[in-house]
Image 1 (spheres, rainbow, N blue to C red):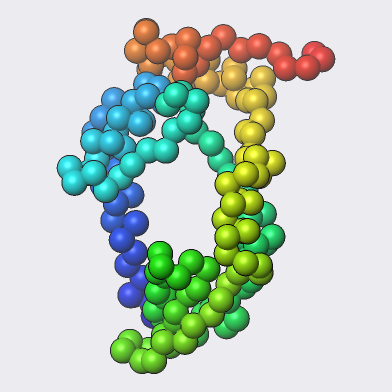
Image 2: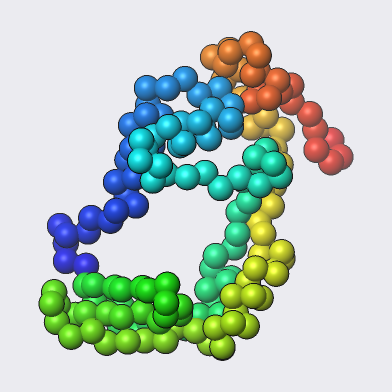
Length: 165
């Protein structure tokens, strides 16, 4: 992209979340979910929870990209990118505004195979490690006093040792 012309619609929507988050009291994960839902009156910002809305799921996107997709050669020379739902796996690019589009197929295999495999893969789900004892202690000592009483045991519970100690 040309410097100074890097506006991205998603950044504006994220800005709406940040704006509301700054002026909202957030004591637990459910409050973050509510901030995201309320941040866009038109419903542009959505929260993707799993386990009945109790948690979030993190996917190893780099692994998915490396297994199934090819890199776009000389990506920095292009200024415009067009992806269409009717043509999955294909990107149309332009070097200059209103210039001719060039198509690239980014898939390493057939479309149907890849998207079904990605949906079926659970090994690409990242599991965050538990907080170490020092971090738990910090949250308990320094953050817990600022959390409402009814959320203290959810957000900053008493520290516990993990493993042998």
